[in-house]
Image 1 (cartoon, rainbow, N blue to C red):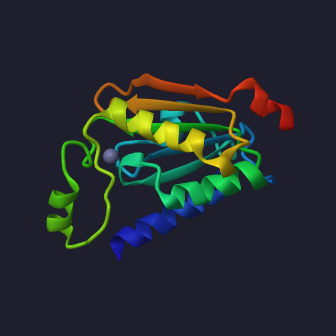
Image 2 (cartoon, protein in one colour):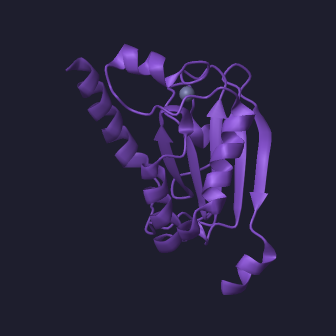
Length: 168
Ligand code: ZN
């Protein structure tokens, strides 16, 4: 339990110094979807601070049903109108197939593997934009984070048509 003790000790230090966050609504009206990869410090990469954004993470940073569930709440209950989808270089889901991953894990699941970052981001941004219950979302960006250089590649942008803003 040494690792757990380290986590708990770090938490004591954090609690003593943490920001005062009274509002659960992300102050920058932003949700970031990214991979669970241990090399991505989401807040540091994007210059975010506590209380400013929702951060959703899964393997690959792909748009799954559970991501849609979370974003429905983000945009209808918690004021989010901008979504950033951030994939990254060196991702374990790139260049593999569902068949490979099913064989390696024994899990009969869809793993949302990535053949090509641009194609996968375009697919995910298109899915978010086309999901009727995410209509409060006004802007979506698809980025690729380079884990070696720390830089972002701005790959896909989507903005809501003006007609959708009339309901706001
Ligand atoms: Zn990854």
